[in-house]
View 1 (cartoon, each protein chain N blue to C red):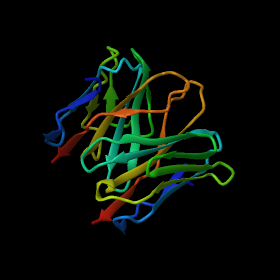
View 2 (cartoon, rainbow over the protein chains, first blue to last red; view 1 turned 90 degrees about the vertical axis):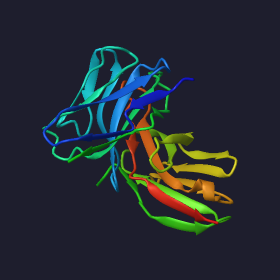
View 3 (tube, each protein chain N blue to C red; view 1 turned 30 degrees about the horizontal axis):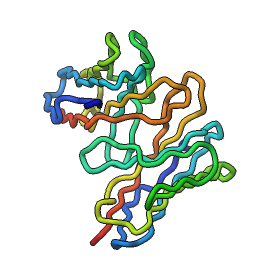
Length: 114
Length: 113
């Protein structure tokens, strides 16, 4: 089955620790994205990557880092510098076709930092 | 002014009602308009899309875009309890190298049996 997987579904960390969220896709998509979703805030773009070894900051990149070493994988690290890391994190991917419009989302990872 | 405005609701309707969900936007460069449906604790899934102005119908769902007013709508006819979800509008520019979608905050819909 083609799709996007995110693991784990729930993640708990102590304040001050870095944590890495996994995102893998087998849709052969070039572009991948990380969003954060908070109640009442909708989806806010953290980072996106249009091709391997290249990525750009989104609207709320501070306190986050990413890498794109493989087409299939786009891990997100939430660093201790992120002031409010508790949130629902969504990974997505899409084709780079200029007519493409659909982003396919993973099931999300709910991160709780205490 | 935010690029995309969407009333967060919550919106509660009886089964069988016609539901109207709306977004306004400020960026006249937006050309692709989408509606995503998100069930609780799940990732969003694409429901409808429209390119530029016009209407598009798919079963009980109709998407409308009025670019002159910078206003998009999603209508749900004969609403069902299974339609209970958060509905997110999204939009993007046409072509170029920017593949970013800009999302509204989402409207929480509950359809009561």
